[in-house]
Length: 308
Image (spheres, rainbow, N blue to C red):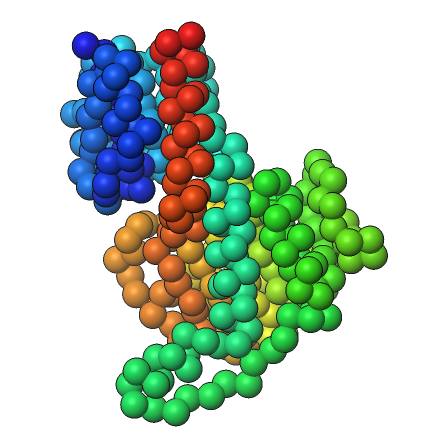
């Protein structure tokens, strides 16, 4: 019986009916350890003999692919593939599929929630009340603010539309400049340097850079407006965490809100524990609706290769 490996945390925590239905197609389903990113050793143990891999965001090394002796297709339950050694997979003739746009609504809504929580300092007030304290920080309204969107694909485009509907003016950066269907007069395309310099809030929705080079490094952080808010629901490597901590400690930024970390879960509490940081545990696409959509797309992509 042909074997399919399933590793996304959203699917190992509780088996999804659409994945389990693959058994009707005479596939053996093998899951990695529940609700955790599999490491290299676990992947090397589980991949031999698997013809299909429904993959998450776990880092995949050449050593892992070397063990994939029967693999024909890697089907991501999302759109990002920067965790995969794409040239090596292409060399081996292994098809890579993406569930494009399946979790766009969930990630976009989280970006909005993080932005509003940061602007109104909701977690700070909530933590105070839970500790028996009456904490207050003067918040800011989104209406009339300049919001920078870095990357305007399925997620970034939705974030731009939602922010626009809330009364913000959108400054967007994306080399492709797709049609975003934002209200006329509320969108302006700019270069990255102008976006950083002009915006009150910057939200990242782009892939990781080559070599995991940060887009928001120490030099770029220095160009942000005093009291800016940064939101990152894309990739941790886009933001230089050490430089971000320095900027927060110096009071140059109002807040940083992130759903992604270089190591998940993070061992260091320096960033997630900062009083000006709002941190969530990579839950952007972890909604019932998003999990259903990306799973349906990922399973369909698997079958398109394995049962054409």
